[in-house]
Amino acid sequence: MADTVGTADTLGTTGTPGTTGTTGTPRTTAKTGGADPAATADAPPVDPSAWTCPAPLRDQPVVVMGHGGGGALSAELVDDVFAPAYGNPVLSALADSAVIRLGGTRLAFSTDSHVVRPLFFPGGSIGDLAVNGTVNDLAMSGAVPAYLSAAFVLEEGVDLDVVERVAHALGAAARAADVTVATGDTKVVEAGHGDGVYLTTSGVGLVPDGVDIRPQRARPGDAVLVSGPIGLHGVAVMSVREGIEFGVEIASDTAPLAGLVAAMLQVTNDVHVLRDPTRGGLATSLNEIARASGTGVRLSERAVPVPDAVRNACGFLGLDPLYVANEGRLVAFVPEQHAEAVLAAMRAHPQGAGAARIGECVAEHPGTVVVSTGLGGTRVVDLPLGEQLPRIC
Image (cartoon, rainbow, N blue to C red):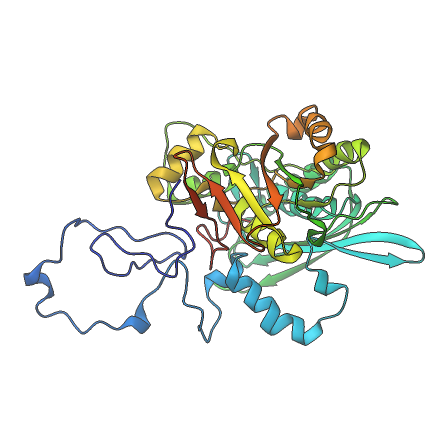
């Protein structure tokens, strides 16, 4: 796995800071050796302020793509801007969905915007993501999703056939997830002020009695489980966007996970933590859990299920599969005494057929995730600054 992710800068092949038109994709150049003296003799002075880094510098006075990547920059945006503006005890939990009590009933409530580009990709579309993303956020609190809202922002000039395809995909995904799209909204912006279709979905669901799933509940000794192979969604979207072929089609894993969670809770309602590792991938989710709970996480690199096609694509592009987004996977922290039974229940469900135990929660190195490599070493898997692949959800 590549170790280049999470650094503050990415070097181009000539040894100078790489630039890119799309945040998160390293620049490549035609030259692979040193700089050509003839070409650089009359070059203007280097201006570091003009560099564009895949992982932007953290003192940016404006919003950069990394603020939407789910990593350290996203966390700073929440901590420094949004939390002071409207922070409250419910929001401070910073879980995938808020668990609130209303009229004596515990509800999970979540909202999510979707700006994926392209709108359609192998295995899904923005319509599927809009449903599955919100359904899965609710499920990560143990909730049974019930109702969604869907708000469309359309760009002037987009084909109505495209809008219809997205709407039908959204409706089909809602039926597959057994949720009702109960309300919605539509806005139109001028040509050039959008990107075809943006979608925002919100959802509510019921949290069963006795279920308390949140990142703060991770405990040393918990087994860390993942529901299946990672990295498929991010590579699928990127391959279509960039027109890159890897010799085999890689399809997104987008899928609703509430049924899988229900199967796990039938074994025990004492599941400590659930997360769907979307933006920033598995590494980001594990770092967030480690920091929220004040524990450490130790993974076995060989135990993490990475499909060969994803591994090869990431190796070709210099990416780390641990940081690549997923849209139909979950990671679970389960007490050791229930781990094997929960894992068996996951494998018996269609959305957990490839489930694996990948590590454990430990008391050592609190707030830090480490990986035991196949060569017998150990490396730290840090929270990324921005995101390897932007606009993937």
